[in-house]
Amino acid sequence: MTSVLHFYVHPSGHERAASEHTQRKLQGKLPALQSVKTELCYNVNWTAKSPPNAEEMKKLMWLFGCPLLLGDVAQESWLHPDSSDLLLEVGPRLNFSTPASTNVVSVCWAAGLGAVDRVETTRRYLLSAWH
Image (cartoon, rainbow, N blue to C red):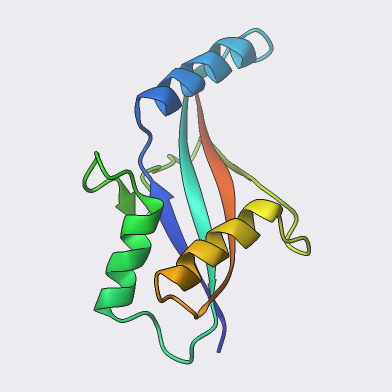
C-alpha cells in the first residue's frame, strides 16, 4: 500500500524575507493583498504496507528539519487560511520525478528508510487580502 506523507517546514528567517519580497511584488498588482506567508512541504511516497513506526518517523522529521531549529517540522500545515484567503501550492508535476527527489531518496535509503521511493518538495503560499 503506497501513501503520501506530508512534512511541513515552518519558515525560518530567509523564508520570511522571501515572503516579504513576494508580498511587495504582488501588492503592485493586487493592492488588496494584506500578507503572504509561506512554508515548504516535503511530499514523501511511502511504499511500506504499514505507516512509519516511531523510529522511522523520528528519522523523517530529522531529515526534513533544520538541526538548529527544533520543532520546525510538523505533519500538519503551519498555514491556517480563513474563508477569504487563497492557499496555493507550487511544485513539480506529479508524473515527473525530479533530480532532487533522486538525491533525497538516496539519503533516505542510507538512513535505513527503504520504503521511501520519491520525495518532492512544494512551496505553499497563503495570500490574505483586506476584507
